[in-house]
Image (cartoon, rainbow, N blue to C red; front, top):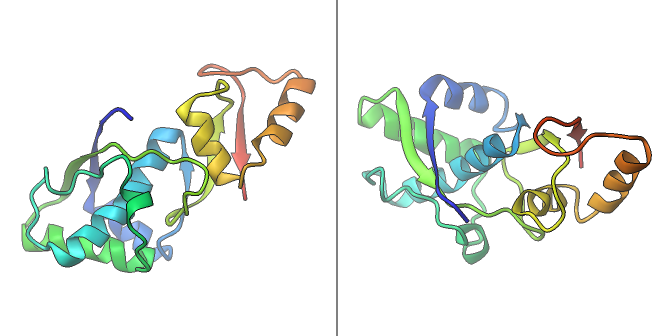
Length: 158
């Protein structure tokens, strides 16, 4: 999976915590960023002075670990890190791949376009709807929805 650089403001982390560590994501890049925050917070819980490079979320991290930390606790570790380092923005990167079997921690609803078959983005959607993407896509195709970047979008609620 390709690397995406992420920058998240302290105020965003605070808002996520205020909403119980749950949110509606708009777009797959936002989904990857928000879910990466969970693993960054888990990492910071045992590595409180990590560097930007240390916090990079590797592609398979979610599948190689099985953390039980709540999303609020993970986000609080990020907020504490920002405070200790007198920072207003968390900057790092992620290679996270979200595929069937992934457990979502922060994203509870998602707005996204309809993606091409056999793409990593469709894997992300499939993971979100517990593998039931074909029903959704069949409906979209039979009702003339447009696909890809400038197509129609959907609100997914698992």
